[in-house]
Length: 358
Image (cartoon, rainbow, N blue to C red; front, side, top):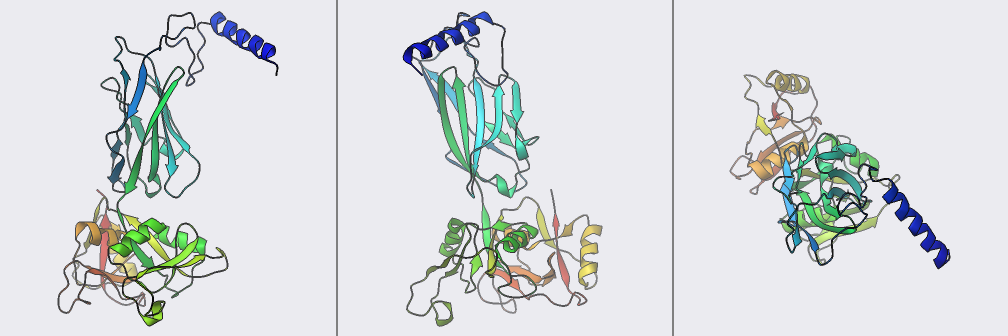
């Protein structure tokens, strides 16, 4: 396009804007919103600043959280201006940036899985924080608060992290029975999700030692070793996270490393007058106003709420486990952890761990 033709198009657009002073396209800015009504925006020498008081926010699954964001002008303006606020999100597991909320004044629109769960704080002036309710595991990631005033566009970012615990998982069929998609499903069924490498590495730094290889969220297979030994890579290798690299997601079979976020609710050992088979255990939790606990919920209660009980109990996947925060005689190994007794016959009689939402 020639310079002369481009100039003609720009003049035509300017004429249309001036010829339709009542026009509004909803969530998209036009120059009539601010200025003197003649298409002019008085913004020379004024800087729009968007900032957040926290670079990272930690929260619990099922709870609420506020992601802070404020904007101001420098120098300060005498009269308020009408701005557009937009929140967007990049998931922790990667992917493209997605819209969360867009607002002009008190008009707003929410998007996708965030509909009905997010709102904007707008008092006092300059407040643009995002309030999120009923947090889900998948909500973790990087959030961008963007403020638009005419041609001015500034933003700030805040990371939402769900504190959690990484645990190895294998199904009742035994070791190395999960391809990538079945590993994802297995973690989800236990109130968790496949762990990222960063989450597994942090768990290794905190002492996680596990010799069986498991899937991670990026499609690699790895395992953490704190005490080098022959069956786990050899005595000569230094402690660390061993990697098999990327594996074929459909054909190769391993265990899984799951990540369960901190708990919003209560896990407890049900005090029942008698021992229960698996079916009776599930019914007993329901009769107590709860549901049988998932493996991820038990790990989260042990890790973050200090759950400590030496009696083995049924969990939702049919496994038998118990959490120990304070090691003691006749309560398993002399270190904290969730003990697993495998998958006994579901006719056998044991206790049960229940989960009650707040």
